[in-house]
Image (cartoon, rainbow, N blue to C red):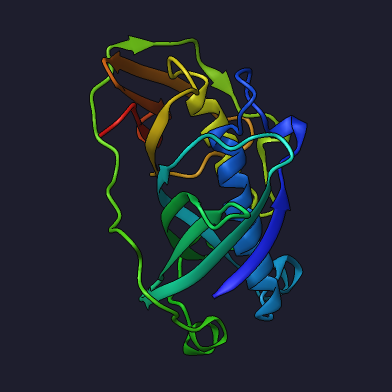
Amino acid sequence: MYTEDFTVRYGELSSDGYVKPTAILQYLQEIATDHSGDCGYGVYELQKIGIGWVIMCWDVKLGRPIRWRERLTCRTWPYEFRSYVGKRFYEIVAEDGEVLAQADSWWAMMDLKEMKATPVTQEIADAFGEDGKPAFMMKRPGGETDTEAEPVVFSPADIDTNGHVNNIRFAEMAFSYVPSLQNIREFRIEYRNSGHLGEKMTPAYSHTDGHAYVCLMGQEKPYVKMEVFYGDE
């Protein structure tokens, strides 16, 4: 298990004064990246050998809202490597031990030159190790859309070190089409296709009682699907 401490900053809050879902994803991405670096496969090392981890899907369950300046401990552990997929679980914990968020994630190892999946080597799997099990199993988003918004063209600010639209940036786009960032109990995101500089994305969405679904569509295929659940189960 790998752990890292965070303190909530003002810029991570939504208008209701609590941490945004995308800030939670940022914590998870940061600790995964730092863990990878401590295992000998940091950003620059991966660039040198021409590979990188690309997120496939998130399933995040939330507890109580997280407040400004709270001190949090994020912990993560890989639990399975198979073919080109690595699976990693996370928990975010308050100072008193209360679990504030849990997340399952699946990542693909990509050849960055060919932009195609490549198997996780035994050397990489051994460097990370497999430690424990997930607290719940991944569920992917599903739904139908009934409203379409104006298209968006990807800009240089959307692109990360892997040469495509960063997963957090995609999530920020998707969350801009949900009715509220308050009282979210779970959200699921699936990344279907990479987005690149200059490509056009068309958002589509639907809202029902206690539920929202968003699809960020490319010219022929979806980039991202997201499902959000509100309130108590």
